[in-house]
Amino acid sequence: MTLTVLLADDHAMLRSGMRAIFDTQPDLRCVGEVADGRAAVAEVARLRPDVAVLDIRMPKLDGLGATEMILADPANRTKVLLLTTYDTDEYVYRALNAGASGFLLKSLPPEELISAIRVAARGDALIDPSVTQRLIARFAVSLAPPPTPPELALLTAREREVLELLAAAHSNAEIAARLHVGDETVKTHVSRVLAKLGLRDRVHAVAYAHMNGIVRTRGE
Amino acid sequence: MTLTVLLADDHAMLRSGMRAIFDTQPDLRCVGEVADGRAAVAEVARLRPDVAVLDIRMPKLDGLGATEMILADPANRTKVLLLTTYDTDEYVYRALNAGASGFLLKSLPPEELISAIRVAARGDALIDPSVTQRLIARFAVSLAPPPTPPELALLTAREREVLELLAAAHSNAEIAARLHVGDETVKTHVSRVLAKLGLRDRVHAVAYAHMNGIVRTRGE
DNA sequence: TCGGAGATCCCCCGCGCGGGGGACGCGGAT
DNA sequence: ATCCGCGTCCCCCGCGCGGGGGATCTCCGA
Picture (cartoon, rainbow over the protein chains, first blue to last red):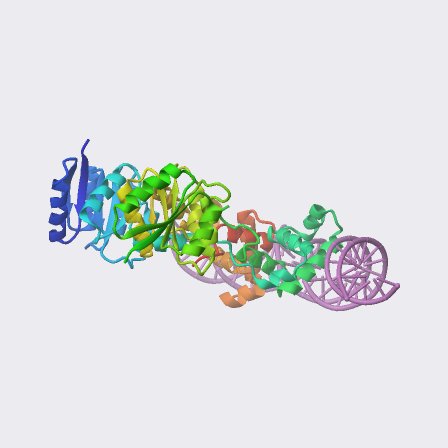
């Protein structure tokens, strides 16, 4: 089975270079060439290629915008490979969010571009190693537990427990019921928590708790 | 300059296979072979290889634990490549968090393993395409804006504005000052917000706001 | 043996807050 | 021309909350 490919780059030279590479591969067929993002979106809708190789920098509509439009249309099953000249692009995050199947540098050896197209066509994804490195770093911090502020160590176990319930927007009476203690006791604990953390009232405590990871606001 | 590599896998067969592959490369030198994670950590500390290739499943200490121990020690400059048999591993998140430079399947062609080692050695990272696909999906959701609950559309622009200040734990008086209106007006807005969102009091409003992305609790 | 920290419970006081009303002006849609 | 949504301001009332005291009891370590 042969794979159909659409090329989008505003440099004719680069397009013909890539096309020449494709011609060496019997199972790859370049079914279209365009020079800007809007044309890329239109041609993808018309030709429905297996893979579209888009440059990031293009007139009228850049590769990112084109990617978003292409992948937003459920009628398209085209996979998108993005090419860029510099690896300093912060665009990678937007590209991945849009659902691109690849983010590659133009310095990539031709045979690896070929291989990337096959990878994308079968539904997998490929990211340039130099970008992957930063992606991992970013991914790690986005999953990293928030740093526990030092003043939290001042709290006793009971007070932390109260703070957690406080963060869940429970009233004093609810906390008292939950902990099987009197509500006067809860008031005492709450007062101590506020004093130790330097918070004005329970409203600030809720905000503080969410910002410091006492409660998992999002994600698991 | 030649790159030094440590191999860690509990299957002697696989180790000798990889070693044979390395021997075909003049610039790669396998300086050690171990069969479990604890030995891997020890040998990395002793030999300081450029790259350590670790299997995920190993006796005593698995590849992930070994990765974490190796990369937690700042004295080590060894890059870690993780190998696994199945791509169903959820371990990839833990691996990337620990700072691994690669996450590859054993089905990888030998020449690509060689190339991965060079990639890792120069500080870049490489993830198997089939894993990358899932990683992108996960990354996208972790950066995706939280879904805006439909009831939020009931709020007027002014009420949303008040909700944002509410979420920042501001008192009615503070909000009034910020918006240059009377505090009675703020009370009205707050009441409407609580009613429309079905919230009991401002404390719940703060929690609601944080859980629905009205305020950016973490990240930029 | 004594002291202090922690957890529990109690009282009083002031106030911010939320609910329930109502009122007025303005702008856009009908 | 009319009406309604919206933003603005006002009053009263009840209550939960937070600060200020103080009081036990238990446990643990000096």
